[in-house]
Length: 122
Image 1: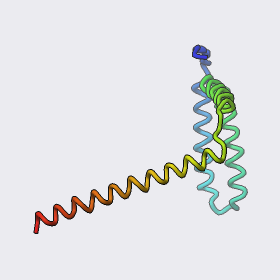
Image 2 (image 1 turned 120 degrees about the vertical axis):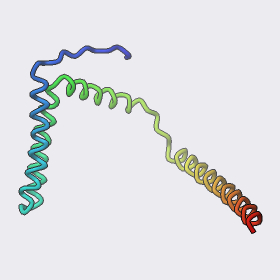
Image 3 (image 1 turned 30 degrees about the vertical axis):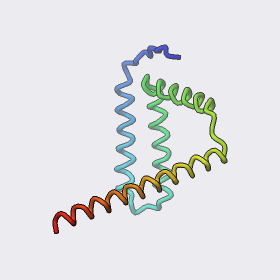
Image 4 (image 1 turned 60 degrees about the vertical axis):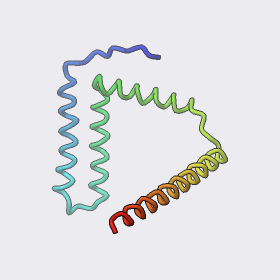
């Protein structure tokens, strides 16, 4: 699992990334320029441009390795043993009680130190 896979970098990767960043810039500027148009049209056009930018980005070596990372993360997420509702509730209650106790201790310490300082000052 710890093996490194060497991904061959294409000579066109720089151009692809330039196209991706250009598409993002066009989406931002276009949204500002067409501010008077209905919101639905602007959102739909941004979604189309975003999908196009993601698709072009996925054709690069970094994009392929990122997609592979997402697939591996999904597999690892399926291996996680999630706590039950009862375990989550009990853990939350323990955290709340500890926070309350710590806050009471800090409040008492603050009050005591404030009393000492006020008695020293006058």
